[in-house]
Image (tube, rainbow over all chains, first blue to last red; front, top):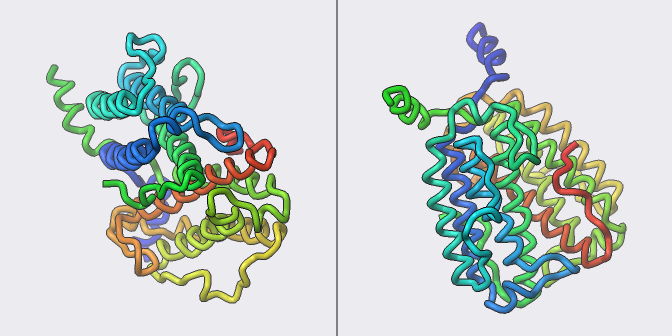
Length: 169
Length: 169
């Protein structure tokens, strides 16, 4: 009984997720998103949408612009927008996928440099989004899941079978 | 230099998220999903979709069936499917929202009863999905974000402005 009481009190501070597990979780999602980009025909990737929304290439670019510079920002506290870099916006499926893969490396490289306390510190990402470090990261991840789900509707309405949602390998 | 080496080694076990923060994060998302349900006209909620997909009411029911019984399962290790309960599937927007709110309470009630170690233990949710407890929870949450994103496309193609993605209050 005594042990249970102690456990109950401790549960407020129960830790759910390590930084490594969160990185794996995100990169798993990113593998799936990469397959969604691949599933689009070239022309439709850049031009097709439903309900007046943005084409999937624009949504994928938004994910890239948040993810790479965002993790770099969390690691260094310097928030450089992608648009300030020398990299031109991708205009083909091939260059979009290439930039996706470069972002994968950028995330992996900067992730171990994020200071442990940064995940809990209140920060202002890109001088714009304010919240704890973990909250900012979940904003990046959730925004990717949200827009990828929209890509599933675009693909279905094009008659293309999207990759399975549960597969993150 | 020595300090950095120690930090790098420690980062493997850096904790990112407490159970309380994860509950807040999820319930924030659930508030937004509730507003998406509300945004649909009654008829379209149950009948409209794009690309031969399921109507949003079916997606919302899937979220409900995972969330309430899922958190109960994580707390008790008994996995009872919603379909085995006495509650009939909702057939109106009002009863769907009512069931949504009952699920909100069910999650809040069972959450503090999830044993601390359960978040890391390998479990088999509903005898079907295998993974660490935190992985199962993220599956529920990410599945909700994924399908809600699809609801945004349905709403846009109906000419209805969806609620803002960033607002989780």
